[in-house]
Length: 574
Image (tube, rainbow, N blue to C red; front, side):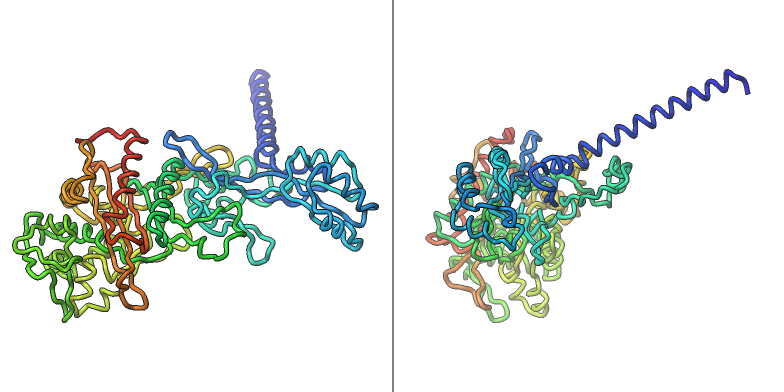
């Protein structure tokens, strides 16, 4: 081997060593500042008191329309005031000095400070650092301050049912997500417990496995599809509905019918996740949008009409006769909502315009009971949507199975009674009317932000086809006419935007019987109708003072429609 060749190899070996050392130093710096940063900061703050185990958790963000992230859930830092009664020589003197810095209850302080067989009594939580510094400077024997972390929700009640909160498990020691996204994504949001013995290369590449393997649940921050300004506007409208009609629960969903991205979603009454202890019942924490079923009423007519058209058994030009205002099925009379007949040769369009139950029974008979069950199942009304929220339940279509050899169950199902579905399931099904006939996946996670700053977007599936594109276009045209000519007499028509919509008013079943005076009102609409950016679904349980959804929910729907069109600067489509 020549000296020149040997020299080249030594140079290359030297380069390799330099690169290796630099990589190790960079990796170690990453571990110290990023992966272990919080731990070391806590240890640095341990000058106040010996380091303690600290709560830590990844963040949740709302996403503004321009892509900016806004904190929805984070970890806040403060300080604990702790006493060691064994070390306190003069409790009154300690109290007098501390009370100049922080407000304390003297009786409580003295009771705790004089427990000579006790080595630890917590006096105050969540103190500001400036207060902690002043207490530390007093140098009172037996008085300590130490850092603490807790989950904090900067927006308070905003999207509380979606976000959920962090609470103690049954052991009273372990903290974890208890409801909402905090629970559903608990594995992703929970940071690894501190372990000083972890291999530093594993720390450097802590996100690598998750990036390479999509099946890996990568730990990190979560950015949501929820737009905070839209969420705030939805919640305002929901509160106004509840107040105006002194109603039961009120809920709403604003979703992109093409992608399944949810911009806003909530029910009222709600709660403040920063202060859950004041709530008297656990039911307030449950999210009815995924955890409760309702008979939705006439909004289902749009789905059944679309199914009839899709089978080819029904066309928009077809007519039927409605002289009596009711039909008889298995000995039961099934009436129109106002008990009136409409005469002969009633077009299919008028079934939607006037929300005629007899017309929907006609559509059901034209398409056949097997087809009705087939489409209601294909729409996913009996299934979970697999939205990323915990405790989602399935819809209930068992009434159809029970009535296999009868007609009345299928007759009532054709206009949304006798079958019950969750709000999120009906919203997903209704999206198929405007998006070309696809059953999409509703979701709240936009992306996961890994510790190294790498963003891992949520994969949006194309969806399953449930209707022909031509059917989607035709039912959209019919629903646009509902708004333009029939909804409140056509008074809410927008000259420059097409809106496809339908109302629903359903009797509420109680103890196996329909109530004579309690109803569920529902409303859905999507716009611009032929290329929809938004679908809005609203419902209210037992509103008082108005009989029909057209009177309770049209105004809030139109308020949201005008807000969204303006806020997102959607160009006119007509």
